[in-house]
Length: 349
Image (cartoon, rainbow, N blue to C red; front, side, top):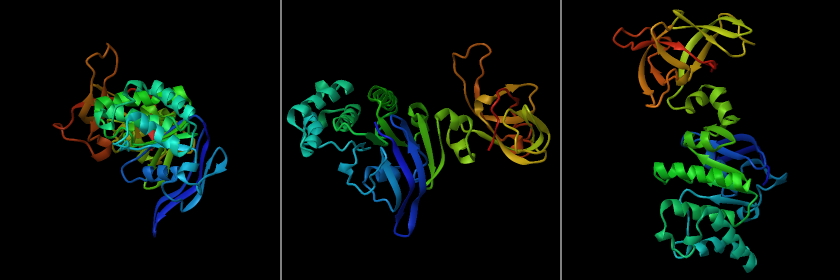
């Protein structure tokens, strides 16, 4: 396990800066996930940590020691790639052994490490097979095993599940999370899939255009996003955004006027800093709304998630389209049902 620190890290390709002064600390034993849209710089940042890309400016520290000047093999990290990168002419055992031989690890220790990794990943019966004889999930386990045998201070995963089908991807998510619990190692995982980020991470780092937008636990980012980008990026169906005016601010939160003043809703958030008349954007998660005959908001339900096993009194989830606060009162044909806010957590964005 190791504590990883990034201090003012920047990356430029000629005159184009793609990573803009990232400051980040990943505590020892944490599972950190870099998430963001394509092209946001998450893989570039991971490759800089691994030593596969040069750092233009800033420091990378592992357990307090600077390592941005070291070769990848000298940093004490192991990386699992999206493409698996298994040697096709070697058996599984030889793939696991090759890196250790290059580092001149004693033969008896190599055998012990391979046996231990094979037991952890349940691939002992695959050790004599060739990569061409493996399924996608088995290949991914071998790639992870090749990282485990190195006994690194930190594991780096670059979108390792993107080549798998949905069912296998879900299974491998669970296996990687279980591996983290078993090893207690520091892991940094890159993905564009918010489901992977929300279900696997101890801490999520949301990036956009080379800038860290927010760092926090999955529930913190979901419930208290820092800005509109984070609010809309995390969550499916997406958060609904409403233009609102502050009517009153008190100990119980804010009273907001929406739909151009035609409706009022309460927001259970800290009222400090908000004054009457202030304009803001309020975010409502789909699960914070429920159809009703007497609610204050008129809207058309565009998509919904309704389970067959919903118990009596349990709330279904809806994603709303054409909320009146966003674009005036819809026509009678467009309005589905009135809606009421049924849960605390309305978030000014």
